[in-house]
Length: 512
Image (cartoon, rainbow, N blue to C red; front, side, top):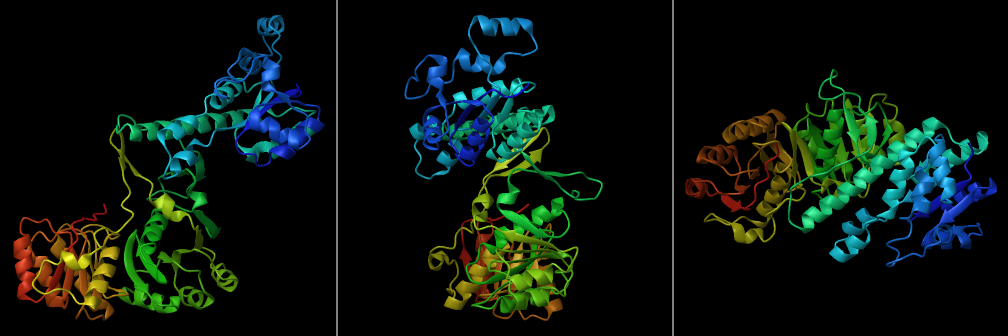
């Protein structure tokens, strides 16, 4: 049965003019509201105001305009039931065969830092979700569009099938509607919960982004939901796996800690080496690579500057699973794309906002939701946070800053030896902090790097003096840590005995 009547009411006008013109050219009567009707009229497209169709004016500043039996009756009446058609005829309710609606921009509104509660409330759409759900419930007869990306498909099918769409398409579009309205309601609930300082419930609805290659292991099926593609684009290579996505997230969070040209190498989400330079990425790479020349094999390499041909030639010789950069020189991309299995990722400029989103983890019977730990804390006014007799020098402060920024991204317990522009030794994930110290010292020795004059960063407090003593004996002259141990006095005394300058940030950066 061909589409005779359509209702269009959208806040996002993308593609609307062409879509409405296509409908009008096929003889479809177009109903519309407010701003959408005005827009279509300006485009020279015939349109009938909803208030004219219902015989009832818009009320209460537009809050009530489509909540009317002429609208919902037109959407919900079943064409295959005689009694429905009789009631529709008796009450003068013609069918509405197509609905195209996108909702008030609630998510965009509350994302603004200065939004008021009143402004947020006024951007809660009522009529839109109601019409979408009514149309989606009756998808056997009604085509419903919540995403402008589907306009072209609908027009194409109508042209091919005498003004009708396929049932399979209507089913797919109905599913998208319920996903969209569910996500919309969840966003409203999250915002109002936050405004009312309550956490009694948590709602989340995300579209499927892609099937992943596999999970931690090949026998584990895994799917990725949400809008990952808004922040990272795969330019080349095999499908992503669960571990690839985790590595990409960790790599981006790490490299965004730095403003100078930086290269970082990661393995299993842990930094293996980080280097900064004033200009040349190759110099930054050399500093990162020298920390651990074994780790890059099958690992992740990320830069915070566009990938140059010079660096691409160097890292192209190493077997790497994923390379990430904000952009690629044309010759660099062409060279790296010759490696069939290499996943080449582009990091979008807006990625920082994604990394600030809450962290959601499964728990037995539910979920845990945690604020993101996206910023290295405690580095401001560092000169006034010294706990030892000897204050750090200017160079030592820069080295401690570097060590602290990297330690934040190392799995706990984390120990990082660094200078002002590079890592020298990294110890990760040990059950005791002194063991992480020993591993970091051993890794530096294996790499042939001296720790004399280095800074050591610890993501959490030194619970005993033994870890700090081991670091001092290896050559560290300064240390940065949160403090807060029952034995802080012992640790400070050990530092003073060894002329170590030590800073307490007051913040812990565990990463589990």
